[in-house]
Image 1 (cartoon, rainbow, N blue to C red):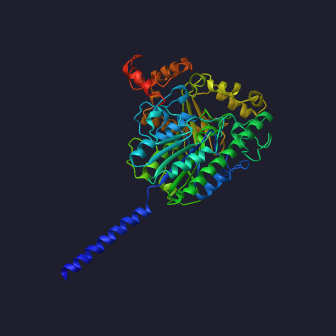
Image 2: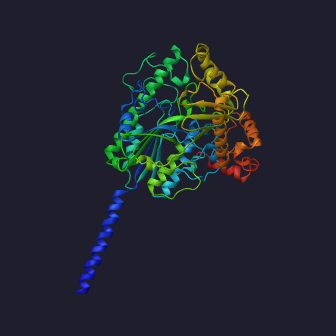
Image 3: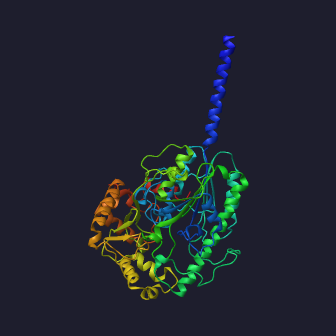
Length: 510
């Protein structure tokens, strides 16, 4: 009788233990992660209060999930921004200082990244659309389709088709990165009937951060919004595919833009128009829906978020922190400062190194080549936008004209009150009333640069990088041609033709 009682008690304990484990598993499953990235757009979305935007699918995603009002990229360039999304590091930390098109690359191919670390944790990994980070071999996706930028917008329904095929291909949790070509230039008004009712030239004014207006600018902005409408439809197609698989309740959906629009004072700058982006997340299994979060968040937060939710091993030294408590509606102590930077885009055309910090109200920009002419200004003003933008600037207010003159030949420091001047037209760096704010943010920025081992703190690195970048031609810019991954760390590159450089050539674009 004692034995039977003991067996019954042991059985009850085991049953309770099994039930507890099952309950814990049901309460905290490892989610699928669907990362949707669009090209060259800021928060020109209905959910962000833009009355000209026609984005019902993204608006619905925000209503069902979490909308971050102050989300930022690390650098307003495609490869640089995407490298931070994938590695959780700033470009000056990971090495992707400029476009992969020009051969810029990570310092080390073994840098931890989203697909590699999630794959180690048992995830299936896939990518649709471009990666645009070198070396591509560092990112071990199980599945890859449409590897190019696809700026011609060919076969747009294939994005959702490939996404659904990948999502259905196995039962293990998945990480899928879907990268759309809109709203990158060219701003194509309509593709295969999308959008169904395009906006016409004159329907939409230029973004407020541009500070200028003209009919030819309005025509381009209207087509930019048409690109945003088409993007919204394609995002809706992918979300519908996710629903058809039956995996939507187990999937964290993250949508963001890779940086701001390719407009005046947008892409390729550290102004708000370049670095502030839309970021929307939906996690039906554990998040509080309909949230609007005002914390300062950055794309370096996405890698630690994915690792935490996937139960993957943490990675030491990441620049961000997990967004999981914010998704769940909690209110933890959060960062008081947020940082961005710039180096270059297409090499010699626009090398202009910058570092920035912002707090709840003020933003400080440090130009590392003060007093020189910013080549990115000329690049944008004289031909990158098909409009007479110089005439539009001449017709603008004195305050706006002064802002463009400052952009052309910047001082070392620019200070803006984002509460009173959200579009950064009034530089307060020389205002005696803001001297204490200026000094405080200068100290904060210097501390961050030191703490993140910024290579450009050394004047010799800055001078050598400028010489290297501005001397290169596109034909010579290759993944194995850059020397900065060596001399930033006190080394010299091996001579051309050695086993190491030959090995890099063999591993390029696998």
